[in-house]
Length: 278
Image 1 (cartoon, rainbow, N blue to C red):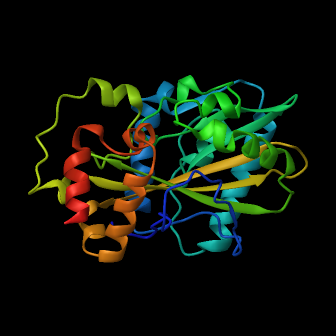
Image 2: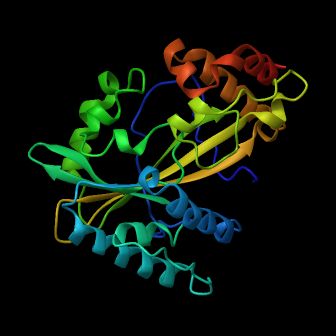
């Protein structure tokens, strides 16, 4: 799809929260892929049920609040939309997630921590949902090199201080050699080796994958709804814009090696950097 967001900051790369107020209140992002992506979600709930939904079993009330939020958000912001048929599922959270292109994650306060209490994630970017359920924020973020030392404490503080009625958004990005939306870590590990990517075809075969994330506290409780919306764009679209290509190249070369290996496809790093610089 055309590049809707380019969340790469100019200058040297640094890990930051990057949170901004969501000023319009329209936190659901519907585009021309709505029908195909909600259809794919229904298929995944049928074929990969254990991989796309998880719960600690203690969040039904908040799940119902999320379903109500989704239904009212679609009605208010997209009144002409032909809303998808929800999946048949006992969880209100699963039904809510099947109505939108966003994945939905419920974070619940337990003592001093926030834990992943329930989630419907059909479009993970190289991680396994089953590994995260019941885990607190810092444990969830362990695989991201350098994140906890840099901003782990700030994330915990933000979750505790998020005001009711306030919606915030942030963006994350990475580079993948597959445009599939459903990319859990376990599936990437068992996939056969892909056709070799070369200097001639890297622009068509590496994808700039953006996560648009929003957070809001649910009414009447401390639980927080965390949403993730995926956007994929072939790298050649970024290369066509000199300023964006230069910004992405500098961001990649200025970040620590471990983080660059995490954000980019390690096997193609040299080709990738040469392509952006050329």
